[in-house]
Image (cartoon, rainbow, N blue to C red; front, side, top):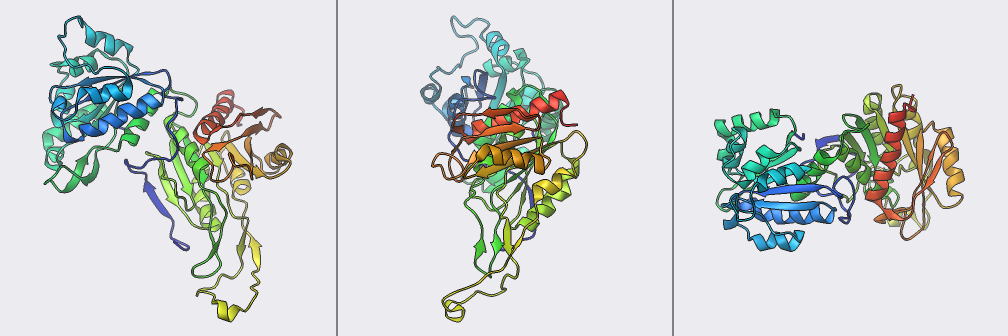
Length: 433
């Protein structure tokens, strides 16, 4: 089962329904893979059209299998419109002999969304009474289930027992259900199908082969920090958190358990990561130091404000009382990345970021050595298509052995994947020790 102002540190599991910002694009782990999307008969079936669309945009070949009941809620033509492939319906269609065997053999993942209480019961008992059931029993690839039903049905002892059987089955993964508004007249409660973006990510995690990050613990810092000047104003920077959040998502897709320590950001956190929300650099330092001793990889992508006002005012500074000029004394914030590198366990990998306006590679190499990083990602500031707030980035990866890899302009999601490729290379080679 796939599991304002200075504020108290907040820890939360990122719930299904949160979407990480950024354009959908073909890429790993979906690119070139074959997914069977099973759709059962429930009101949540309309959301499956988006699942099929998003998997296709990520580069997967999607074969949709509709149950008889599903066709009462969604039209087959809708799925053909977003995948370019006609949905499959009948187990005994003319010319489709052994269709279930071929689909099961060729699939890299089977995803059932929505998975109704009836289907969960049939899957738990191994029944193969329709095309979707036979595909599932003929398939050796991972399977992802997204339950969706009335809250009373979800709470029923037999449904709970069926879910327990499926949760314990090798290669079976569950996402959701969420708690929220149900069908008309049913109010709110547990049983709502997980958000399509969460299901797409669960499929991606199931598709990715086990690698060096599978089962590892990864800490990612992201976003800006805010240092209060008075009760309403603060010193900060233009960091959006897009790069750090993309790294957290990519690590999760690769099978890692991810802790995301993030300053204020308008980017929604990725599905399935543990989120620690902070405001100031001191709060971020405390959160990082609490976790750093147990992580296998630490990626310092946050843009921590270097200086903070030494004596922030408790009330609002008034224009009429300040006169025409205000002097603010600033003190240095802690260097979180450098401090934490010294506290990591043997063999762990530390990754830094260098955002520079001049002498990019040279300054990044200096930071790499001075702060004890294993890798550093250098990216330019001030360019319209890279750095703060952009959806794309231009990154040069440097490692402590002197290797340099200049990546072309790409989305931050793609850049995150490349950075983690370099992390996995070091982990496989034992070079983190």
